[in-house]
Length: 113
Image (cartoon, rainbow, N blue to C red; front, side):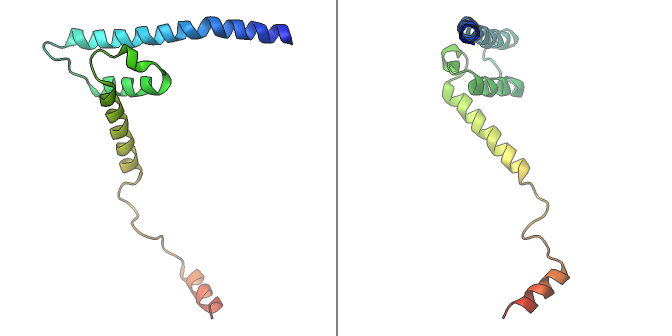
């Protein structure tokens, strides 16, 4: 069992730094793609914003790869997305307390002193 755990630790030690490098390369390539499609000022589309919010949740060193936007901007996008999610989740529909059947109301009245 000790040999198996040692192999897992070695494998993890080899893969984690590579994973961080791959994620950083992905972040830099995404920014280059935005630069290529823009003329003077890079224009970020909603998919680009979603990408950065997603990346900020998964990668601890995401700030080190930023070249186009500031970290505060990515955090603001994340908060806006969270706000939109809850607005969607609590959208108009049933307002107020749900209706109670007449039988249950009568039962409550009979049970109360």
